[in-house]
Image (cartoon, rainbow, N blue to C red):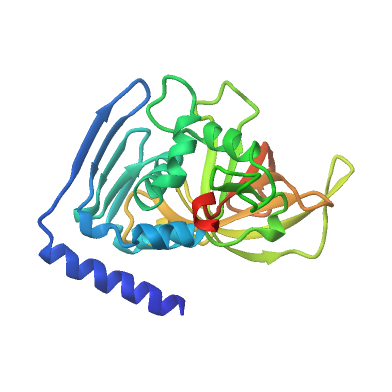
Length: 274
């Protein structure tokens, strides 16, 4: 099924590149970033009705489409995306924001509205604060933003968004945010850190970063920069309940990074539940 999906995306992309002439360019400058996008209308694969009915699937499929269309990418805090030429220069929050803004705008708007005052787009800390304040229910009469918080990593699904907010406010970035591809493996043996037991998962994710994860597409010979948008494996440690408490960037032997974690899932909006 996955191979057929990738083949469809690649063939579809190749066909539209030759025919499309309707290029939409958006340029915006602000305090935090320059935002420039060239996105032909034909790249919008999902109807509004499909996006509203299957929002988390749209996030997953749009991330996969970007991976199939990707020709070059750099990790930059400015956002410069040219769909026509397969160029994606952005950071982690810029990538996730881009996916939501153009493929699932109804779900992007409440996150954008809640962002830090003075920034032109949501940053990792904005995603964390937003998801952390959502309820752990898909009942949109109680949780009307179109998002729910997933408390336990074992319940995460493709298209969910994992974000962590750095506890160290002196870091250049506010945190990191990734799109979940799948939970690859849960390791059966526990890891003890400061007399507390944790269990680790290997998780396949899509993000934009300045360095690579395990078995990362940014390590391919065709990628000369080893950075930008790509897909790789990270490791997450959960407590006895199943809540994420730390991450490891590219190896189980890496030093665990204990941060503030949240998982968000896009759900149907109240209008679609009537």
